[in-house]
Image (cartoon, rainbow, N blue to C red; front, side, top):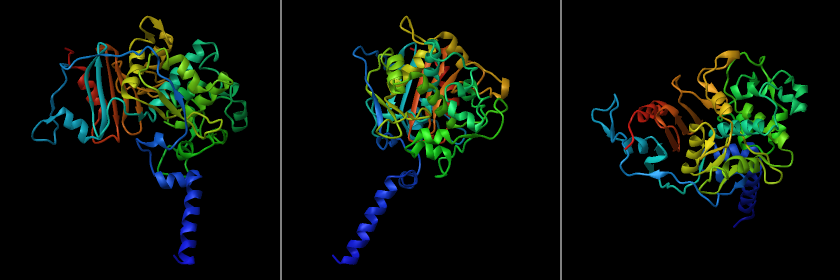
Length: 373
């Protein structure tokens, strides 16, 4: 091999190392959020409980065997609809019984799947736990009580409720296609504390709903400040993962290996059945088999319709409200869902490689109408 060729190879290797070590490099290499992203980030481990809660299961659950769409001449099978729309896991749980459970694309019940923004709903639950524990006084407190360094950025009038409602007025580029935007910096970057310290406001809080992951990362900063030396993952383990008797180990992605910060706006990596238990907890108003894990008041406040102070009727405390009928859901960027319908006593989990070409909330509402066996 010639010296010139060796030099070229050396340059390519050096360039690859530089790319892999910086946010822009990781953006260029990985390009966009992917269902396997949990493998590229460091993380903290959640440990399954020795006593494991398992849903009952039936092979005779009543769900639609076929579905008819306006652009199809013939009905198509339910399984095919799910698979064609990039689903990897789908569970229908009614009356604590798994009525339907299917996996696609090489996935099974033991496959790890990232939550993406479903983690926002979990972060909200942990804020509620911190209020129950007296670590946080009220959602009406200014966040500068807990993150005083943001006073210099004008955050004195931003409350925890503004963050929960996505009405803080945060100046935040949510696009993952822009490598220089805040969302990409938060997702691929390795210093979340620094990124949070640079956040600014573009309008007064309480004027308008605008979805921005920075709100949830700020909630994470508040949470970390009150937990002192305990990590958010450890608090999650203590307050939810162990009490909910999760079947499998899981993890929460962090920005860097040493003294890393949890990506509270995304990135809990778990199995579909364990995600379903988050839905079951809220379905039962915070009660788990007789033990109140989180206050019923917090669950109700988190899932009610509220249009005051710029709030959106379809969003409350990091949960999506697809209608005004009492149903609500956690949602992630690739079509990850925990759907809860208390009136029908149903939880649906859908995990996917992407959204596909379907309105999932409409499908969930349709499925909720079917009786259980």
